[in-house]
Image 1 (cartoon, rainbow, N blue to C red):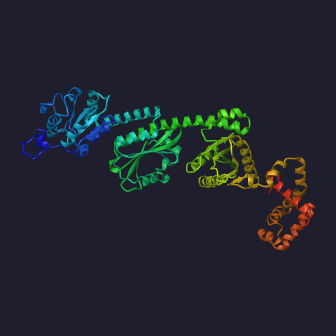
Image 2 (cartoon, helix red, strand yellow):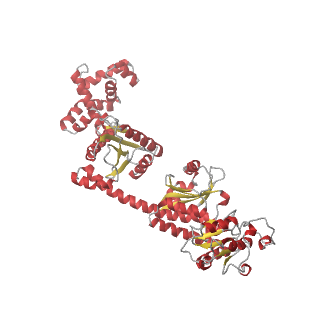
Image 3 (tube, rainbow, N blue to C red):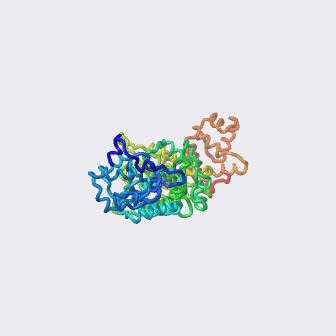
Length: 579
């Protein structure tokens, strides 16, 4: 009988001639549905042709290889018990399986290894074989398939709960998001992607037969405007009653089901099942819903681990920067940083300026976003809930006396641009110093970067990182400004000018600053102030009268310049009100 289906010899009409194998019509159950909705997730399908579309009439257990008409109906899915499987050998496989193919059955369900020789026979007979891995039992499989055939909706819901339990177990075992998306992709036959709150793809799985351009799809998924409006606000997404949304994507012929990954009071990310819009069904909807709940567990666990590491790292950095750790303790705890400290580093300090500002946590998040696309590794630490400190690794320059500080300056510019785009009404101040060649240098460079940030604030150098080495004489004046004698010197020379400006709505302090900026050139100074040359000369006379300093004498000119620099370093509350 086996050979009769493979050669051209005339044969008597078989039952398959009367009841041909059918593809399932819409709403009917086919072999692919059984795979997705009833069988274990790692079940394999072997055979030829369009096997997944074959209509399944019922599920039957085969007691013997003979007398098929007494045991099964056409288009049944036939379960072969292990005891009967043992009687099917490579030698008798063709003769034994041919009647099932001719009957025809929707498919043969096999428990355990099917074997290459049997698979070749089944393929030649165009017989679909579904291979269920251990430890599934015949009773469990029979019940699951029967439930699907009787009540597809209930079976689909049960399948989704099985998926959630499996994904939760994978999270507990530490398998991660990549393995979880792979399971969801295999179950649905669609692309599955997990994105974080900034829409960066954390894991994505593709069916082997996908023809979608991967780069175009990822780009489409990363556009925040493509999110449903309610999901663009992470707190609103957490409060929404709707669990998932169906969308058309910008890529032709593609849509997605998307669900927020909720942890606490906000969305921590998003899960998408992507496929042809008309083919996304109830299982896909339940997958994205239950999958998002499982991914929330994984993200919460990852966040807890990250926070624990961050706390240990923070404790060490606080002690290191405060100078309270002895050298032996630094060596012992250095591993807590989980960072290569043997390379030279630039140290950057960053903070908000103003009374009403975003939180430091949001500033930290923005910095991490920039670092995700930065070529050099870096540590970020919130110091004492006051400001951020960034330790960015440098690449040692081929020249032995320099390091790649430009990479840190580039990072500073990118951070400034990101803050301007994300918080357009906010102001930042920053300082930078380095290189710190060894870990023991970090506290010194931190102090310099902090001083540069504070001086930048005094000098109104905002929305940028002020480099310590560029401050010149201000570094010396910063250390001197609090001495009583220095403060008296500054008040004696500059305060008369400031008081004159308040009383007469003048600008003598601004004028003398412009004069020194233009190296005493009267024409350039007048031009920069938009005043006539004679007006400037009058102001210069008043400045000399009020300060007692003669600008044609080098010592007095230096004293006036130093006094002005010291005045500019003072907090605005200590200056005249309008300055």
